[in-house]
Image (tube, rainbow, N blue to C red; front, side, top):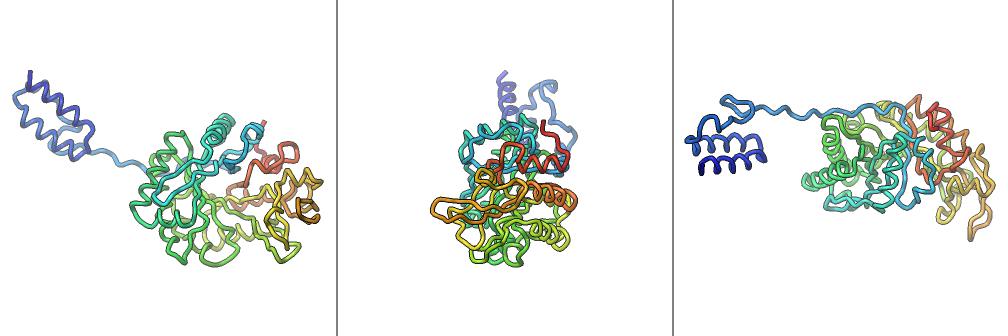
Length: 374
């Protein structure tokens, strides 16, 4: 009886061990407790004289999302002020943000808002991603070592599983060829992508620069990463091409969108299926300061701007009336066509800046693509 009890205790420890340790433990158990009846002792799964072979996990891309309509939702917006229909217009909602620290930890900003956004997105058929941002210094320090990257990946996977997320979006603005982070960014995304792709369960996306300007930031997005299988798609931030000194310059016109897609796909070699074109739901002035003068699309319409135009004269406290440049519905429709014929969809920064009626930019995109949201 004592032998049987000891045997049972050893077997309880056995099930928590690695494969090699299991086999060693089994040999020890068998030799120590050979006085037990043969019927009482069952060999480890697989039998024979060698340890059982456990199939390696399959790393593969999750199912394709088709035509992507991705909307960012920042933590400082009130999700209850956004109609459910707006969530239904998207098939991906990126919650912004979870913020990374130098040790790889990730803190979700405004957890209560995050919970509401996640619930509203899921109930309206959208997949929920956590978009992760952070300071340049924290990104750099975290990604510099295998230990730092491993800590980040573990934390990201924990958040995905515990919050029933569908994926992670990385918003590192920006890795650079000038400080070595182009290399560590590539390693980080590869390691994170492999973990998310185990059995094709979760998605990985990344927000990247326009690609219009050559240099350290554009070149940090390597061909190895663009053409590899770890990142499912890239959100191209085709906006904020502004000037505080040059007047009459649109920060996100159709020409910029064409330039961005042409560079990333035709020059850099990004597969078409990974290219998601970003559109802004806000306007910027040109030739003057951007502080206090940027306005949401909804606010521009509220001050007399037209949903059919791309510029308007508006007012702001402390400023004389000035011209602001934005995307109206006609341009949004053109970009929807461009994003889906040359790439794989559209991304918007951000949902809370859009109008919530028939003048909505997301509505214009969905109507153009034939995407149902009723």
